[in-house]
Structures are given as C-alpha cells and as structure tokens.
Image 1 (cartoon, rainbow, N blue to C red):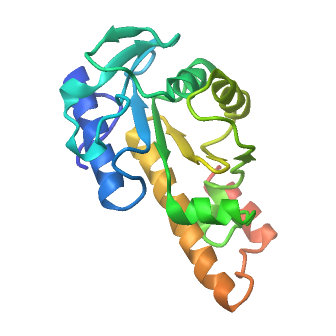
Image 2: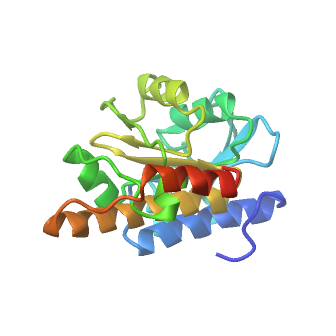
Length: 216
C-alpha cells in the first residue's frame, strides 16, 4: 500500500482501509469474513469502519460505515462491524490512535492458545512488542469485550484476545499494520525455534541500551 499516512482526505482514508483489508486477507492474516478495521482523521470524534457480514476482499470504499464514538451510524448503507464496541472504546481512551486493525493472525494466535508468550527475540519484538497482553475470552461483539479492551489499551500497541484474535493500534494505518506484521513475524520465529529448543533472547542489558539509543 502506497502513500499511507494520517494526513489524508476522507476519500483516500477510506481507500486505504480497503487496501489494508485486502492485503491482510491475501497474506493469510484473516479470513474473508473475519477481522475488521477502522480509521479516523486526526482529532475527529467519528471513524470509518468495515461493515458486518460482507466478504472483505470484495469491499469497496462505499461499503464502509461512518460511526460516532457511541456507535451511532452517521453514514453508510450497511451495519458496522459487530466489534465497533472495542473500536470506539479505544478511540475514547487514546487520542493518539487514529487506526485500529483486528486480525486472526494464525501463528500469533496459535502461540497464545498454547499459552506461549512472545519474547524479545528480535530488535522489533524487544522494543515494539515489549508488552502484549493476552486478555481472557469475552464473547465477540459485546460491550463487555469493548470495556475490557478499553481498560487495557493505555500504553499498548497490541493485544491478543484469547480464542479470538489480535488487535493493533497506531497513529495511522501504517503503524497499526506494521505491528500486525511484527507480531506474526515474531510468532513464526518463535514457533520454528521451539521445534529445536527455546529461542535465544536478546539480553536485557542490550534491550535497555537499544531503548536509550533510540529513545524508546
């Protein structure tokens, strides 16, 4: 996806949501009927979100639904994703977040189902994924799940919903998408390494040095 960023007009923002969903599906990070995405222009109290029940690879920008932070439909012909509760909960808690992705990343979820926590095995995993909580299962599409996510999202770039999927957030779609990619990459590496033995981690003193050097 080219020219992704937050300084976009509404037309391009909607197109990027569609491009992002198609990219995630083509890479096996979600099924055609699973996963969802939303994005907003910086500072707005409303967001564009993917619709419920439509096959994601066939979505068009006109299929997206504009909702306020209470889930009320402002514009659009379809129902918003049933996960609008946690999307709006995140936007309410994080004024720095303008994009949210929800995927079913298979390796990331597979490790979580086996209660294997991601460890600092790469530079990106050690810095970006320093704290990825695994939240207990809550029924999808409920206000209870939305409240759980909203209560946990402060200071996080990603979280895993047990037996459900992955949520990543970002200042824009690039940041949210990059976090999905880094999570799945680290999960695949962890899976492969565990076939032969525990993965080698970056020493804690080196992680602290990296954080100081890059002011993380």
